[in-house]
Image (tube, rainbow, N blue to C red; front, side, top):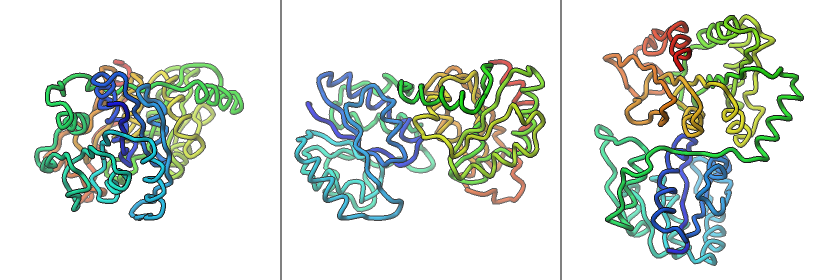
Length: 342
């Protein structure tokens, strides 16, 4: 198997969860070249994967077919003569490119009228019996090699690129952030409010970290959409000069590098949580409406806080009962105590 193409998922956390599949493919086919077709949003994850030969970026738009773009990409990819393609998203449109590119083995889960577009497939597990995402992706290996061991390499591993590391060092110098213990707080979660710990709790936690040691620095990290939450945290926190809002001001490559040099990360269940786990950085992960059995941070340096209330996991974007107790009952003191055990 000389050439393998991966059609990447569209969420950062899901992309991190695919790295063990790449590692297993490289172990099975050590002479293969593994390329990844990814949206601009998740491409940095694959630049941090040592198994990847080339990351092919595409400006895919959410819920858009972009037929012309997909035809052009298929024409470019056909010239590379891939033998197999793993189509990791479940959508019909994600299966179009490898079909148009005439890749012989097109591997994925059944769904959204993809019969024919996918020619080696597994049934999607039911929502009531979903395996962890790493195992979900890893299971596709059996379609190429039924003797492969899906239990091998179930922990994602990412690497920090040197250019991203140097860029973050410059940013820290330009912002005049003193050298000292660096904590990263990731207050956002793209899915919705039911996965976000309250901003005043994050503010109290950040203040407590600086009370413990005045040399501690806290960086609030996230996308542009998290900027308002970060500003709320800043406005409610003590010791604001030690707290820095970098939401929306870093690339994902830089965010990976910043997390990699931090002392610890505190986050909601989010893509940045999975990045911290894959970098083996000590972390506390706060879960609300989602299920840590399905999407846990896969690291022995991670501690999950989840109350396992009767109403959770509800998997809703907003609390259907209106009280958000699954997050509000996790107090800053508990998170700080957990953090200190790391």
